[in-house]
Amino acid sequence: MSHDNAFLAASRLILELDPTLVEIVLLSLRVSLTAVILAATVGLPLGAALAIYNFPGRSGLIVVCNALMGLPPVVAGLAVYLLLSRSGPLGTLGILFTSTAMIIAQMVLILPIIISLTRQVIEDLWAEYREQLRSLGSSTARAIPTLLWDGRFSLLTSILAGFGRASAEVGAVLIVGGNIAGHTRTMTTAIALETARGDLALALGLGILLIALTLVLNAIAYGTGRMAQRAAA
Amino acid sequence: MRAEPTILPLRLRNVSYVVRGKKLLDDVSVLFTEGKRTMILGPNGAGKSLTLRLCHGLIEPTSGEVAWLGPGKDLPRLRHAMVFQRPVMLRRSALANLTHALALQGYGRRQRRERAWEALERFGLQGLADRPARVLSGGEQQRLAMARAWSLRPQVLFLDEPSAALDPGATSAIEEMIQAFHRDGLTIVMTTHNLGQARRLADDVIFLHGGRLLEHTPADEFFTQPRSEAAAAFLRGELLW
Image 1 (cartoon, rainbow over the protein chains, first blue to last red):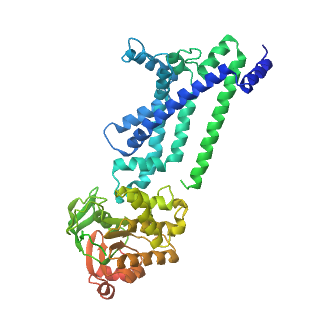
Image 2: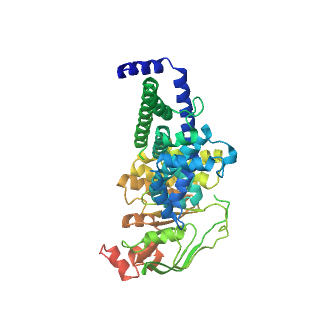
């Protein structure tokens, strides 16, 4: 198949909502969205706590979180694989090569991003709010929800960055998911596989959708940034 | 107006505050009593803001004691509030800034809204309720900060140069609010650079210089016959350091 034909075939797959393609997209979204929601639920309060509490080892923890932002996905995949494999500490759960395993792997990838970016945002806010909040009678712990809400626009950007990383990576989900058709085949793993097999139409179709998704995400991020400016962040 | 017992008087006894070996406040003793408007005056670096922060409990003295002595000192809610020179408004609507402060004091949802609206109406700020607080002008933000403090029904209000960054119109609005607080029975402790403002508002004057309390006298007396040479020079407009 020539490349031009591949483009045409890819467009047809998208326009005709090819069932295989739709299934892969929906699975990918489900996995990445779940991973992001879980990572945000844990990461936002942790990042805020890291920003406002002083404790021994804080600097070390900040450096580790920053470093983990660049963790190679295959290494994250390997770590989760070892954890979930039959002889691993969580092997009895039997969730290796399931979408749950992929969610866990993506969480491992996103969590440092959300924690680190949240810490930066909240640290700046805290410097500004600290005295006023204490004056109003807020405890340090009670300040966390206040700060998270007031940093909402910047934090949404960090969550979107996490989602971007989750939906774009191949290595981790490939290792712990196994790229099983109809089960753990995501957009990125499918692209890798179909390209290798020569089915460029499906690979291209998924690639186009993945890029469109990235565009939409960035549009949302830009839009919320503008909203934040209007609210004079 | 108030049924609850007073937390006053507030006593500072031999209070010093030292940072890296430098005595920013040096052995200050003073008693604040109910209903007074006390102006804390003094040149830059005299320790005026520091004194307010110590009174409000934002910082602890290096030595000495800050103590509320009144029968209401153990009331569950914070009974004193502070308005800063540059008020910090949360990134929310004006109304939400008030309800947040009330939430911190443990008021329920309905009471928060009621009290917040009451405070906005009391000072003619209803029109700002839904505006994002941080796009308001400096004067509006400061009035909102005052209304926020008032909504907490404090017995004592500390004000740190509340109008230093404002134009005369906004300053006058702030002074009117301070007078209204006074009529409501609040005790006012305030720092200012503006001698005219101090003359307009003061019952008592505390004069600080170089971290030491040089005078604590009734306003009439302070402005006509200050006891210390430093205060006299300050009133003549001379530079002190």
